[in-house]
Amino acid sequence: MAIEVRNLNVWYGRAQALHDINLTIGSQGATAIIGPSGCGKSTFVRCLNRMHEEIAGGRVEGEVLVDGVSIYTRSIQPMYVRRHIGMVFQRPNPLPTRSIFDNVAIGLRINGLAGGAALKEIVERSLKQAALWDEVKDRLSESAAQLSGGQQQRLCIARALAIEPKIILMDEPCSALDPIATFEVEELIRELKNAYPVVIVTHNMQQAARVAEKTVFFLQGKLIEEGETGKFFSHPEKQETADYITGRFS
Amino acid sequence: MSVIVERQQPTANPFQPPRTVHSARRRVSNIAIIALSLLATAFAVAVLLFLLLYILRQGLPYINIDLFTKIPTPNGEPGGGIGNAIQGSLILVGLASLFGIPLGLFTGIYLSEFGGRSAIATGVRFLVDVLTGIPTIIFGLFAWIFIVVPQQGFSGLSGGVALGIIMIPIVARTSEEVLRLVPKELREASLALGATESRTILRVVIPSASSGIITGIVLAMARVAGETAPLLMTAFGNPFFNSDITQPMESLPHTIFFFADSPYQAQNNQAYAGALVLIVLILIASFAIRWATGGFKQRGR
Image: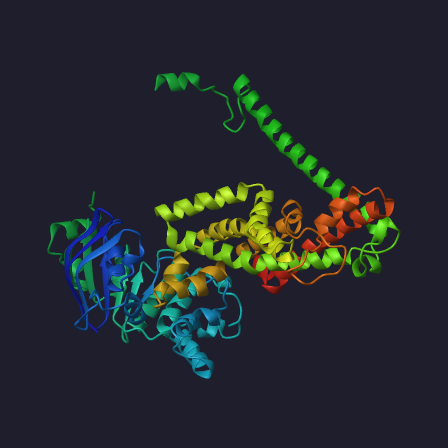
């Protein structure tokens, strides 16, 4: 499952948020996208599963190919794209009025993918994959709102995993979490990236270095530099990248 | 710099407010606002409590089985009941809810989910606001012209239609408000799982707003249950039991209106009993709906 982005230009109304992005994301491991606030990194991942167009005035030009299929072709409906490309958001967003079980099951139920015993099995498997099963197995019928922030975020990851996506996008998944919960989610990302390509947006450069094989740097809506994470941080090629990762950034 | 230093008093405690006219005025106005709001609350609660207690005292002695099961006696003879009015009110509010709630709810869903800031939605929103403010007798007149006159007779149906139209703007606006409050993160959660817009609304947005929507519905039902004016020219009234919606129908507010003004003491007393029944029915309805939809449970969390 490789993603290939070609000449991607993105707007919010009249304001252009991304300029001519070209990027290939491999089928293996995690890719981190870093950059200062407002550089377009969240906008970029939201274009990979067509969530950008849910924002009023959102407009996309260019191509995004997932395994060679252009997801912005007229004949492709955004909901099928999202069925196969899972997303985890910045703030944990479990459905607060639903139980823990229902929160994981909702994707399967909405899409009519499973029911009965099969549903239970998939929910259990997804919660185990998200390293949450042992903490919640005795209270699956309790409200998801009672979980801690880190647990809620892992619940959202379980929910995304339940519909068996082919790629997982994470938009600053740890920025609303404390250091311990962040550690738990990072551990989980390190597990998941063996099975799924993971694209993670982060404003935390240490996090990029900890979890990602490849790092991409965005600045003011432009892709400045991409490279293998180790080399990216030790020997950046561009002056902007060097300035940003060393904190000398105005 | 030097100006600031001069202004500071050398021994001033920063947490001790300076004794100036300005600070004294601030303290006085602070206390005045608190006192005023307490006083206003006390007055409002006192009026409401007095009203409730007065109706309880005047009506409770005349609550008995006959009140619910019998129809009014002719010429104000003692005995009899207002069973026809209770039955009529239940049928009228039921009829009104039958089309007032769905129409209002879907209008609210349109305004909040699809309309946005488009010219049509803005127009609809304005009209709905205007509708909320229109005196309810106008809706009675509307039902009279379009149902009572063509059918050449008063009917429960026309009363139900009039009350239903009164419910639409109330349900629409409250639903719109609470649906708007559902955070966009929850919608995104559902959309990101591959749900269509309509499924997202049905499975995620509406359930999240259910307790607020129900509050709006109960408010609308309570509001129309107490309406008298529109019923005068639609359901009219009926001294007998009647469940045929093509025939005139009695209602509690209508009975209260006539009994309170009656020259017979027995009917005056039953007017108070009827008022009490109306209040209790509305209370029961709102508790029942909350209980049935788990509204209490959600609030407890």
